[in-house]
Length: 100
Image (cartoon, rainbow, N blue to C red):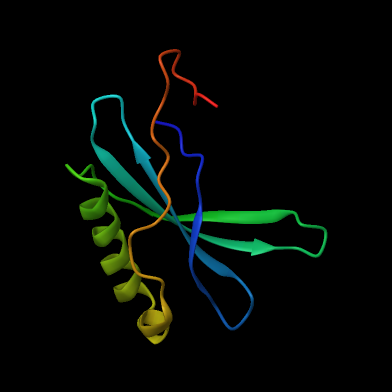
């Protein structure tokens, strides 16, 4: 399952970001991953995976699980976090690649 979308949840005081990625598998289940990202002045980014969440039956359930986890990880930023729904990648096309 490839992840091609990132949606910011919160920007921390140091300028780094907490991002979420949501993906849909060919089987129709959804999953999310949380990342921290630091973007340099030349627009190059450094990304670190914080967590991968198990599959969920619906997109919203997967995103709510990830959001809840993010709130527990970063309680000082919890009130300013963007709530679901987030961007979603529809999943691979017939060739296994995203259809554009």
